[in-house]
Image 1 (cartoon, rainbow, N blue to C red):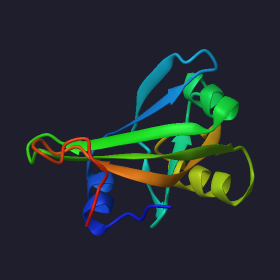
Image 2 (image 1 turned 60 degrees about the vertical axis):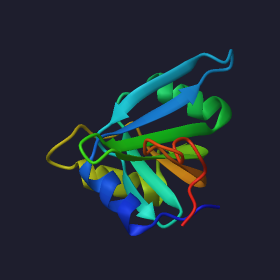
Image 3 (image 1 turned 90 degrees about the horizontal axis):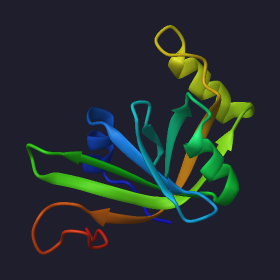
Image 4 (image 1 turned 30 degrees about the vertical axis):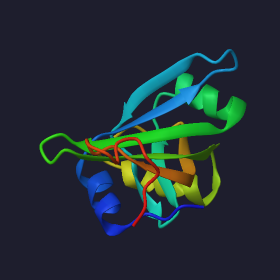
Length: 132
């Protein structure tokens, strides 16, 4: 399992993240997740607001990659791992509380266990596994 550092946490908190999943036929899907946030050093959490293709893909195979970047700073990260959608319990309750008063009630809470982290900065480290 890979661990988030403070720069990664700050970027997730301050920039729009995109999640990519794949369906049973290998067709990719990508979409913005304005609710993406850090759950802890090894997990991300987001509110699944539509219950659409991303949720179906995660329910089907549990694979997800999240990308976040700061274009002005030319910095970015890609987080790959396994994902699960929770429609009740503690994670769902956290998602509902986060959404209260500003977003629709979530269809689920997506939790991603981070297995690998890649650097998206331009140059020789672009697309390489992150190393401290």
